[in-house]
Length: 191
View 1 (cartoon, rainbow, N blue to C red):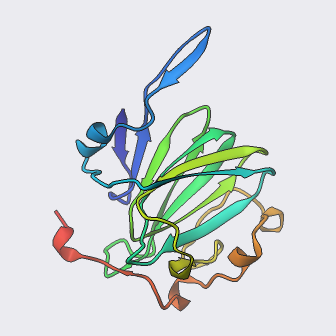
View 2: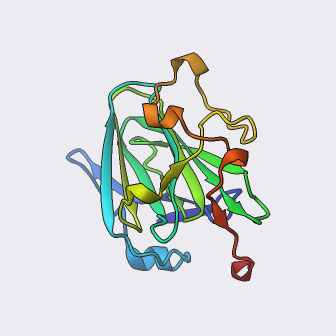
């Protein structure tokens, strides 16, 4: 598995090896020991799978607060998404900054989004299936988010705003500077 640190070094882009022939393919999409070699020692407790029927569905930017914070290992098994991770750790040198990547069934990339980051994705194709492992169970009372088009975040979503399809919940999310509950950066973890 090839692992690349992105501009926000805590976020990893992973590319599992895909072995194929005329019959199809085989790919090891998760290997605990291989990821531990790259510093990812989290234990996953739940797998989730979503289907977005239309192009332009935007889910996010979501996160869960401690003690139910979640790291996410995300991938696409059908279609494609523009995937975003935003550093929401107050005191972090990269607070409010984001990274993005296109994840698709074709490129087979995965993204590791650690605790302390908001996460969201925009479908680039109809009938996109998104699969992800999480390090904490879903806890609705700790579920939070940020509005997708916050000008402070300056995310260059590849879609016209009028075409974005949001849930009612995601329409109501605050901007980063209005959010009262975020994460605190642990300076002792800096290398």
